Length: 180
Ligand SMILES: Cc1cc2nc3c(=O)[nH]c(=O)nc-3n(C[C@H](O)[C@H](O)[C@H](O)COP(=O)(O)O)c2cc1C
Image 1 (cartoon, rainbow, N blue to C red):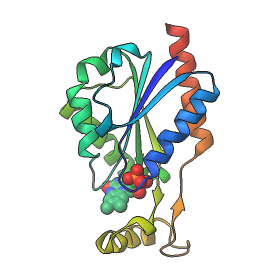
Image 2 (cartoon, rainbow, N blue to C red; image 1 turned 180 degrees about the horizontal axis):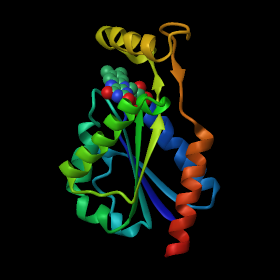
Image 3 (spheres, rainbow, N blue to C red; image 1 turned 90 degrees about the vertical axis):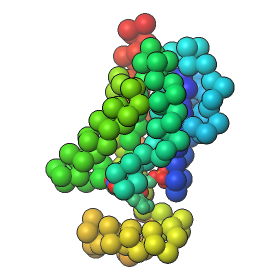
Image 4 (cartoon, rainbow, N blue to C red; image 1 turned 30 degrees about the vertical axis):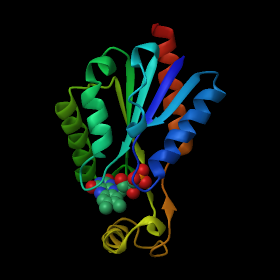
């Protein structure tokens, strides 16, 4: 399957996830084009069998560049098999309030852009203290103290479940291949 992966990332974890998805899908025999959302304007989505958009949550919102991309290309996205990878720290836990909020962020994205992905996958992200400025560092230390109080404070820590992501990609591409 010819697949485009278009992502936005603030501290780098969604970029890592997008590159991992590229490697995994190529290993499965698919052709993959990977682009940052700011550099994807020239892609003709109608030439792809599937499109994956990936972005992360910051204070309840996705990066403006992925929102702009989805809005500008909503018609094309709605005509191709599409998946949204929503990266967040809420997805690393099982707090019902956080999960409810995550679903609202996706609904907001759909409403704002007019794009309705066939599949939404919530992917656990990472603490990247080495990437944060002063304000973010202390805001995230607070989040960390609530989420993972026994973990060493202020250290980068990844929660992404790579095996689960691989299985999601494999199942979805198989289902799409069977359907086409
Ligand atoms: C300033 C800031 C705000 C964040 N807000 C949220 C949030 O509202 N909900 C959530 O689940 N995760 C939140 N996160 C966690 C990020 O989604 C997570 O760190 C993710 O891995 C970031 O991906 P990126 O490195 O691709 O930007 C926040 C992170 C930062 C730094």
